[in-house]
Length: 174
Image (cartoon, rainbow, N blue to C red; front, side, top):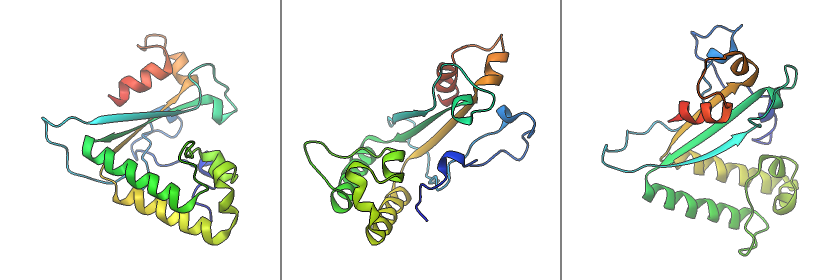
């Protein structure tokens, strides 16, 4: 199966001590996160962020609107340079690649095989791309941190600071 099939519905993990009736106590774990030694205390780490969902509004019944996810990937500077070079090589080797407009790995474009990802309609090419991407993630020396905020519950916590769910997620990540 495509490595991205169903990720929108995937519950990645939960702290065994969490109360299933109170999802906000659950800790999300990223699969395939690489356990690496802690960087030296005097070594800088670059943190790259991306969010899923919006910090505005919520819907009790629509998962895509109820939760805000913030993912951070921390690299030492040399590790980030190696990762970028390896990622560009994966793109060049497996996708319709235009150096003036290199493809961006958007989940839906990959899943629905749009734009530069049209080549993934070919099953052999898709498997090869999936394997290369998984190998890249497996060999990357980084720290992955995920924070998921239940915006409905967050809104009910009137004393919670900061009150903006995005700012709260960012603070929890740091």
